[in-house]
Amino acid sequence: MIPRYSRPEMVAIWDSENKYKIWLEIESHACDAQAELGVIPSEAAKAVREAGAFDIERIDEIERETKHDVIAFLTNLAENIGPEARFVHQGMTSSDVLDTCLAVQLTQAADILLADIDALLAALKCRAMQHKHTICVGRSHGIHAEPTTFGVKLAGFYAEFSRNRRRLLAARAEIATCAISGAVGTFANIDPFVEGYVAEKMGLAVEPVSTQVIPRDRHAAFFATLGVIASSIERLAVEIRHLQRTELHEAGEYFAPGQKGSSAMPHKRNPILTENLTGLARIVRSMVVPALENVALWHERDISHSSVERMIGPDATVTLDFALHRATEVIEKLLVYPENMRRNLDQLGGLVFSQRVLLTLTQKGMSREDAYEAVQRNATLVWENGEDFQAALAADSNVAAHLDSAELDELFDLSYHTKHVDTIFERVFGET
Image (spheres, one colour):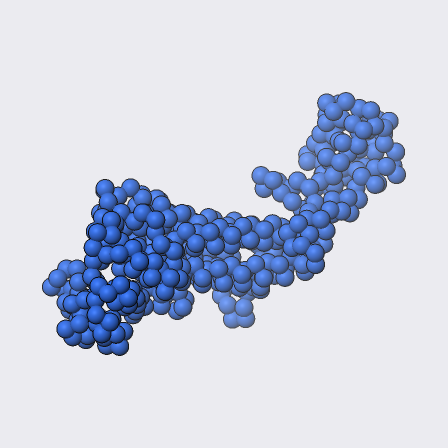
């Protein structure tokens, strides 16, 4: 997590100030619940609410001696609360505080990421509608295949990020659990009522079996979801990078006045933002495997997961937040060149209509094998000699025996390939 790829709102979630604020809230709610049960005096719970405070520098100072962050926090808390502090943390373990806090932080992060996805979806929908009927060539294996529209391309990305939004909502719900169950999770020294009380106050669900820690399959699912979202960002970025290549020049990143593309070559306009997104996606995905490896802890708990999560929690969410925001800006400002799209579509002299010719010949009585051979034979003339595909077919006696010139003209009509664009858009966006 470095400032270059960080945005303040997400960074603030992982600041010590927010972390200790959540810790204090957990401890305070737990005291209120204990007081309601009659385990501790109501005056003690009130003292925690009213006098509970912390000093980050003082906590750090104490931790240098205790080598234990939760004890350092509780010690500093006691310095502010006074004698009633002896009732704080009754029957609780460090993991009750740490795991519940992490759940809160991850749900806070998820809320920001959901807003980020919403912004990207809005940008994709806007540009898709603008280019719903902008004809371009579709490619498979990087080779011209058949006509499509640029709007359909963008609609595909919209649908993908809509799925990502649903995945993130599910991951948020799964991670939002509270554990206040004490040593090895048996509630021996703390009533389950306290856990339910704290969970409700913190906007969480209770963890059914915490074993002293919240099971890490929940966290693995959360970070795996972030990895999938990062991969979708990369797919979008790679598409733009390809379309910006000089040989295609169909779409590209906005190039601002005064911007420089190369220290050596003044003419360069490089896809630096989408290349950056590709790199950031790799970083987010790299944090999925450690999250998966965190699932297998020893018995009821160990802390092998702790150091991992202290790193991947901030880094994955901060990086993905930045990447989603950058992707949105790229789409909003994306330069689109319909003339170049049409030029590239026509580059192969009509070969993009080969499948329709093939199918029509079979409908006219030719075997599929003979029809395929005839179409491929004439396509080869285009590939090797630069001939016009329609003219080559018209001059082929085997083809001409089944198709006259008027029928051939109809087979080379672009509107044939876009006749179901409205259907695709209705499936993606609904009635518009």
